[in-house]
Length: 355
Ligand code: BDP
Picture 1 (cartoon, rainbow, N blue to C red):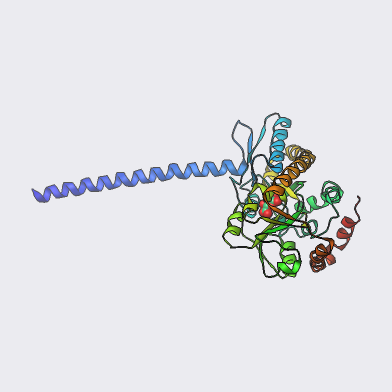
Picture 2: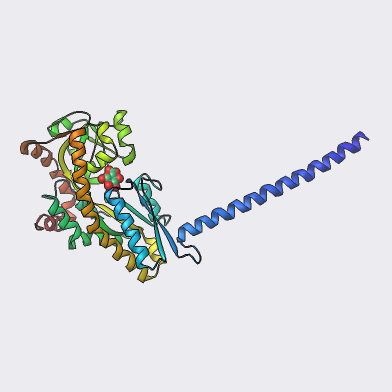
């Protein structure tokens, strides 16, 4: 009797196990197909019968000038496509908080657009290093003339020509970058030995090397405050609006006005997206992006003024004398040498650009 019972029990156990396995298999199949459907939808950016939904990644906050331009781009595309193409803008780094990651996603066709700095693209598009060379521009007007004019178009075209999975749509103003740190310095000699957080930027890396300092990469813009506060780096470099909005001035209260580089921001699309869209939609998107260039430049000027006012009260802005500045300029010469052989004519053309 006992033996019979235990055999029945064994049978029951077996059936239960089989049921369990079937259940697990069913759950697995449902999960697998949903993930697959999600991936297919996001890769193609298409939803049957509902037009096209695309995603744009942005690290800055909602009211920052580039975010306003992203939203203007989205509005124009939606309107001009008669509501067929919707670009969802994800600000504050909600999609990608690190720009090199956003760039990789664009190249893999997993993201449609990103507004990023031109710096991380230089690794893939050597010509773009030229636009970021230290102490290249005389002033705002000179810089803006270059990025919005025919030379700017040469740089944008160079991105598509390199065939590295991205298309440059337009440049945005990002002002000029200066160093900031926990202490006041006036000379390039005082920079020696310091660890400065930089973007993934070959020109900035080389510039700091020639100043006998070290450029530290791998820190996203949102993490700079924390890394300075905790002594992982001695300082960083950026424009005043980023220094203010990211709260970096609270960790590094000395903003040393070196104005050493102008690194334009840029709106980029994934080449895989453009391969999938009809030519007319690609043209429509390119046109809308171009129209946001001047829109952003105006918002930038307003923001720069507001941020400068806040920073003048909340931090210490260190103005340098011409002599002190010339020490910083001098160190840039070595950086130019590396690019002169290949891009000498372009560098000259930029220097001679009016005004
Ligand atoms: C800001 C750019 C932003 C970069 C940041 C940086 O607008 O795109 O992420 O610099 O230094 O000026 O990483």
